[in-house]
Length: 195
Length: 252
Image (tube, rainbow over all chains, first blue to last red):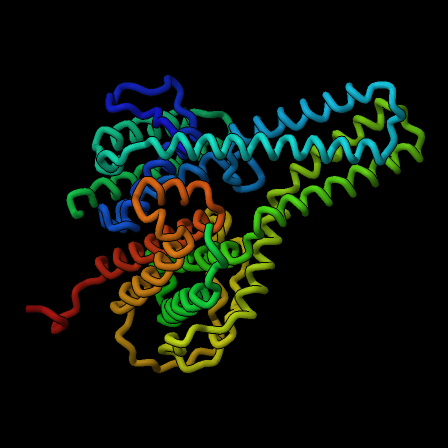
C-alpha cells in the first residue's frame, strides 16, 4: 500500500486547513517506514520512530476527543469502497430478482451476497495496493528529512491555534494534546544526529 | 503471513515485560512522570501482544462474518414479517441490521481477539530459555497474567497502572532501575525476531517489511507492541537522565 505523502519538500506547501486525521496518517507512514528500516538494521534507530510514534499517538488522541470511542484505526478508502460495493451488489441482486417474493430467507441470502461483494472488493483493493507498493523503491528514510519535521510542526501548530480559539471546551482541550505532540516532535528531531 | 504465531516466544516477552513492570511499580517511584509513562506503555504493550496472539485466520473471519450476517438478517426480517411489514419495510430492516452489525464489528472483534489471545497464551508454556528471572514470587509463572483493560489509551487510562501490585518479595537488592532498559531491550530482541519470523525471510527488506507491517494484522500488532516497548525504554532512560548523579557512582 503506497501512500503518497501529502507533505512535500516545500515547508510552505500543504493543505490550507490541516486536518488531524491526515496528519496522523502521514505520521504513520513515516513511523512505519522508520520502523521497518530499524528492523532490518538498514537504519538502526529505535528512539526516533518511538518518539514520532508518541507524536502520532497524541495527534490521534486529539482527533478522538470529540468522539466517545478512541479512534479505531480504520482505512476510510477501504470502508467506503467495501460499503459501496456491497450496497451495489445487494441492490443489483434485489433489482434483478424483481418480482420474486421477498421473504426473510431471500433477504438474508442477498445480504450475505452483498457482504461477499464488499469483501471481494476490499481484497482486490488490497492486492492492488500491494502491487503498487512493490514498485516503491527504497530511497532515503523519510524520518531524516528536516523539512518534513518543519511541515509537521506547522500543520500541528495550525491545528492547535484553531483549537485554542474554539468555543467548545472539548476542542480547546485538544490544544493541550497538540502541545504535547509538538513537544514529542521536537524531542524526536533532537534525536536525529544520534543515528 | 507464515504459520502460527509462536505463542511461547510471546509469553517470554510478556514475562520479561511483566517482570519489569513489577519492578518499576515496586521501586515505589510511581509518582515520577517518566516512570508512570513507562508503566502505562508497558501495560498497553501487554494488551497489544495479547491481541496479536488472538488474531483469527482470514477464512475463519469470513466464515464468521457470513454466518453472523445471515443469522441476524434472517432473525430481524422474520420478526419484521411477523409484525407485518411491507416488502420495502423488510428491505429497510435488513439494511439497518447489516449496518448495525458492521458498526459493532470492530468492537466485538477486538474483544474476541483479546479473549482468544489470552486463552491461547495461557495454554502455551514458557519457552525453555526463560526461567522466572529476578523476583521470587510465583506470580509470573502463570502466563495468563492480565492487566486491566482501558490502559490502552493514555488519555483514557487516567494514570492507572497495570495490576502488578501483588505480593512482591521486598528487600530486593537489585541494581535498581538502571538495569531496566537492558532487560527491556532483551525483550525487544525477542519481539522483533518473532515479528520477522512471522513475516518470513522473503520479506526481510525494508520496503517489503513496511508493506507487511501495514497489511498483515498480526505483524501490525507486533509492530505496535514494538513501538510501545521502545517508548517505554525511552521513558525509563529519560527518567534515568533526570536523576541527579549520586556521588561515588561510576564517576570517573
